[in-house]
Image (cartoon, rainbow, N blue to C red; front, side):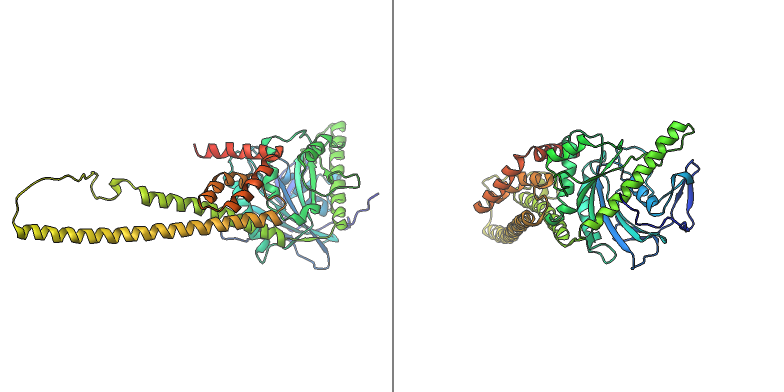
Length: 450
């Protein structure tokens, strides 16, 4: 039997909440102090209340696909910390995500919510990441690593974490290509030392054992914390606890059960964080930086190759001011010696200028080749480092880049590198989950290139 670790009385005096829905239950939005942590406004910190260093502060990160229910889950945790009861017919929200098309995430930012209730022994920091795999395509997913790196390295960010929470729906009984891609993308963001801090928050649950989704998790071999039976650690949430209240007794009873079950799950989840040591994000920060370096090296390598080819094979129209092609031909004519000498000297001058131009071109080509070799080295070094420190070094994006990278390494005659990379790729694509993730990624990239 779990005992709550929070005071429920006296009630917390909330700071000017704004009524946003008449209900029932009435919904209020909490006033927060908001701060942007990067230059692009993609990493944000919203703070409710005042921090008390005497209280425990738990830090959790929520990840999952679009529509999994992260927003409802965040607000459920906030209501638990504030001690809200079902009978009060009110609730509080800290998020501002509109409930609309569930196929598209309403936010592309990473938001860190700091919740410091006055009457609680504990405070909570919730890091909310954008939903993966929505209808806007893959471009947004690529930004997550860079934004997380900013959050983990900025002075106002976080350096440690208590739990990484996969948010997923209870109804999932198998993982399709899209889900494998999402899982691959998320796991690739973290260091291998975080595996025992990964848990599952299962939404839209009826309260029964979620055999289908747990079976799918086991089949996909997702690294995570395990219980004494060797099964993934999970917590169940109904996600209907904030629905508009009905007036029939049976429906009210069902809604009460949904509310109480979700509050119990929040309590059990927060208490479980005491069982594990908080982990540093230093290794995860290193993984994020290596991923950014690898992506940058591949991108720059592609640009250098394109630039080199354009210098070697540019069209005749790029060399003249007119849109014409000049063809050299010979003809016989009579001329005075002085005229001939002048033309000869002029031709010599033109030859010298042409020689200078060719020398500059050769120099440019050599510089591009040197840059190409340096980028090859940087990309290979990043892959090798990721294989040592990343929870999932063989992400779908990495495997996709290998299709381009390996031939370039072979052209540079780095046979040892080629063997390492081909061995890595062969091992990765032998796993069904990786093949599914790669298939989804390639299909998405094909759409982007249409």
